[in-house]
Length: 236
Ligand SMILES: *Cc1c(COP(=O)(O)O)cnc(C)c1O
Image 1 (spheres, rainbow, N blue to C red):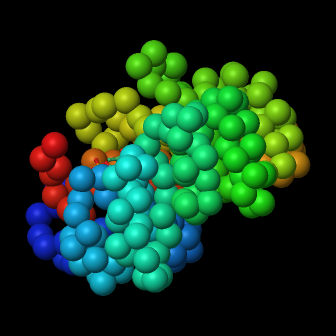
Image 2: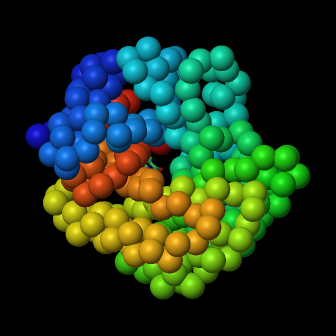
């Protein structure tokens, strides 16, 4: 199966939703239990509109400056915005309250900053914690052992709501190579859940992209972040 985008945006969205549903069935999940987050970096507003018309409901952006004009342009449509890129601490203030979910909280310091800004804004910000499963030095994210140790401190932050984990597997040539990685993220979430920390839920697993989302869904992803298979290759 070629997972890259071939057709029009609407055809791609329909194919993708169908593939996600088939993979959900294989994993024994219920229809609609896996959500598609469309990664829209470098994608223009008109293309995004076409995607929404075809059924996209969640849009994931990597950079605040790029996201803000799109959010403004698409105001009023029944969509959610997720922040999926690396978030600098000094930008936390501008992101809090604007995005329904931040997938990429990669340090205790960032979690504390988001908590502070959410308190200022009088809201609770939903977040996922990004995990660096392989300990790759170039990649951001909590190391699993650190997360185990720091989770009670994250849970103590009363203006963030931890909903799950997110990870990006190391580059691979075959989707199957990512399977053990996805499985380990799910097992980590299960293990950490047993700590029973109040205010921390680890039910959501954000994992899987264009090249490997069916495998991620089979391994328990609740959200896949897909760009290329919807909008085609980025030219940036
Ligand atoms: C771009 C991006 C994706 C989507 O990647 P594709 O290979 O285009 O599907 C997913 N997650 C993050 C964090 C991204 O930056």
